[in-house]
Image (cartoon, rainbow, N blue to C red; front, side, top):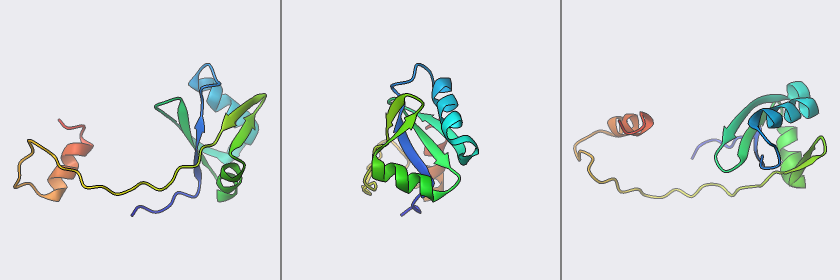
Length: 107
């Protein structure tokens, strides 16, 4: 199981007109405490903070205010491990080759 990320939260970004507006609002509100912002699909972004205090506080509250915009901070349950059956892939391949294949975008 991967280690738990204690610095990153996922926020909804649908209230902002652009990704740049989201990043600007985060920077104005939290300054240097925002380490990274990764825009994701589905009007959301992953925000990584410098300390775990931000994550625990925001997930407890369930939202944050960025200027005059209320942004949701959904809390997700840990992912469930599942078995995956892959068709049309050579049976004799090693795990490393399969991993490399999927990491390359299946090319």
